[in-house]
Amino acid sequence: MIYDANYDAQLIEERLNCKELCRDYNDLRPKETEARRALLNRILGQVDGDILIEQPFYCDYGYNIRVGKNFYANFNLVILDEALVSFGDNVFIAPNCGFYTAGHPIDAEERNKGLEYAHPITVGNNVWFGAHVCVLPGVTIGDNCVIGAGSVVTKDIPSNSVAVGNPCKVIRNVDKTDK
Image 1 (cartoon, helix red, strand yellow):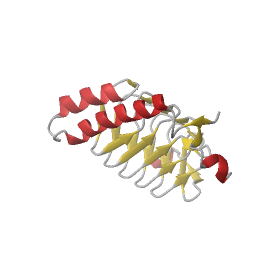
Image 2: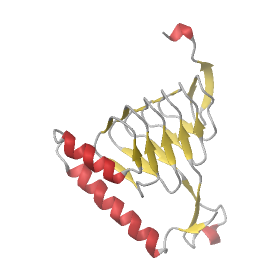
Image 3: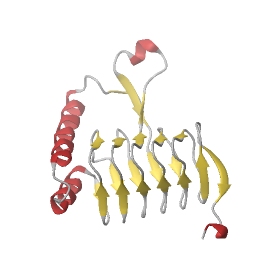
Image 4: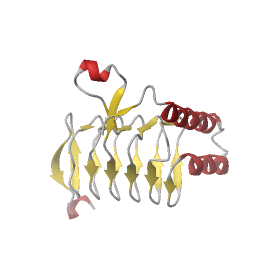
């Protein structure tokens, strides 16, 4: 569904409120672990267990982000959560990764009106993202996957896969030889 992201007063206010919280989070000292955890619980829609997101961290709304148990993200995580972004348990994210649910019309006239759409991103359990991974709208990544550094994930990745590249493609399955 197309919506007005640039001129809808309520959406603008919600993004500004979240950006204030992200700024507060990013300004905390690294050793202020309890304050960092408490602020992440205010920003994110759901946190099911231990979480650590290294600073800086940026998101648009926060309330559309769901995080499972044992979640870790390194520096410069960006989540544009215009739609739901769900992470399972035991997800590890290397530096400079982005998860982007928003997209814009191809037609310039429509795009220039500030219109956009959003599709959810779903990440399963036990997933590891290498540095500089970009996950685009509507993608589902299954359980037990490794997404290689620099990948641009444009399509779903099935469970138990090692996937790399631009566009990201499965190069092999995860199997018992990986133990």
